[in-house]
Image 1 (cartoon, rainbow, N blue to C red):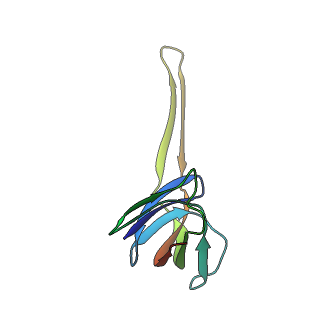
Image 2 (cartoon, one colour):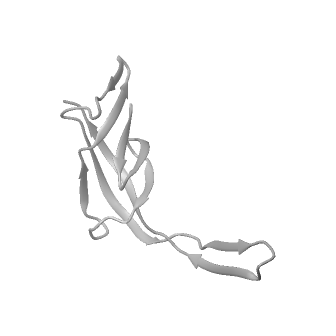
Length: 104
């Protein structure tokens, strides 16, 4: 059984026991998180598809780590104008371990 949920403006697919990297969430390492924005739940009997959310479905997770991702390079360039800009960016993230998917 797996679920597709929305967290931080992005959608993630996860089953029980998976590690998922999402955008930075408030909370300490080891604290429990409850995600209520579940879009789809796939189980043995079929799929529950929300319109847009599955009512009553929840995903429970535990915060495993928080940190910063690898650096990406952002460049701007204009042809024949001697214009170049280069900058780096490191995105903050939170790693979640999915502990349970609850159906309505």
